[in-house]
Image (cartoon, rainbow, N blue to C red):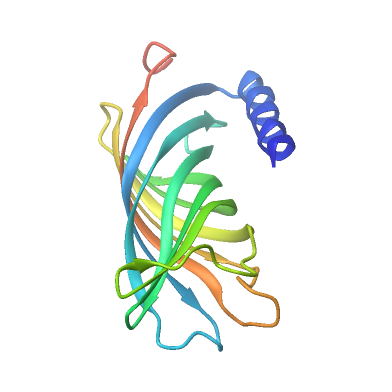
Length: 190
């Protein structure tokens, strides 16, 4: 995992040298997570938080790459059972501005489980046996930038890897975020 994170950081650093503009920012928001698949038994949404750092690599006036590293509280509920699975997520979204301030996003998502637990009737039952600790999926979303560094974002992501062997249940998540981009380029170069 450390090697993958290092590789992502090196790729982002190398890409930023060739990009038209490069900024960093912070993001935080709420997750509405669940599982999807044929073996999921009437799952209910788990509400959690996410927080992280975001990069903005402007390739052209309308197109850029938005990589992030975020802590993400995910999971789901089934009756009195709560499944809590927290990830370090690394989404890498292509960002295409369709009108001034509004962009559509899409791309891959890599997730690494950092903690997991089962609660039954509010009591911790320990870790989840047999849980897949890596998630690979895709995201789609939209983002609106206000022009002063502040932005609102809505995204949906779905994992491609089952959470357990021989069990069709994949993580999915709807997130709503508020973020702020610091301008290290001194404003627009136009």
